[in-house]
Length: 205
Image (cartoon, rainbow, N blue to C red; front, side):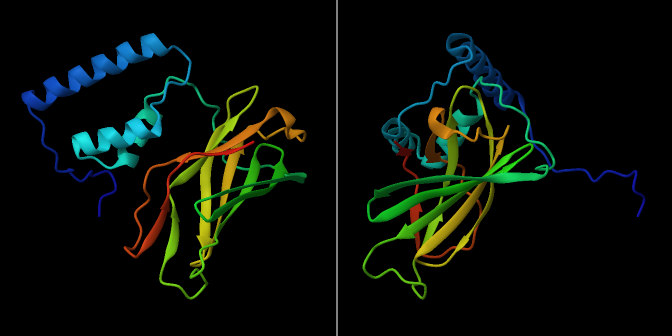
């Protein structure tokens, strides 16, 4: 194989699609001019209504609006840096028989790693169940500055799921000025099974 050769990727494009794309870009530019550097995001009820109206997945619509936000996020560093300590969070919300628990943050020099536990409290939920949790969620940090958030891991069984999120820059050790919310995120491809889909905003007050 010659490494300098590039495989041709099949692609189709025409003037009709180009016209639509130009309209989309023009509307996105107009939207950004109106919103400035502020977060403008439709309520979840509106996202669901559009999903039915346009026959699209709710999370696809949500992902689109997340990506056209004007806000400039900090860059996620390639490494976490040395571990400095652990900060307890211990915020719990229960909604529709599901417990959401933000347990703690591992404080590194460059990032914080936040841990989330999700427990299914339904009567028939156990580790041997064929039902499992699919958390189409990411963590939103609200504070005195903007934070970059990357969902870094997820695992568990039918009754419990654990997730971790990398946050940059690192969170302050005093979390009194920081608020946490879980918001819908883009679907990650996984094997098709019976699922409990969690895609509602969860506010830790």
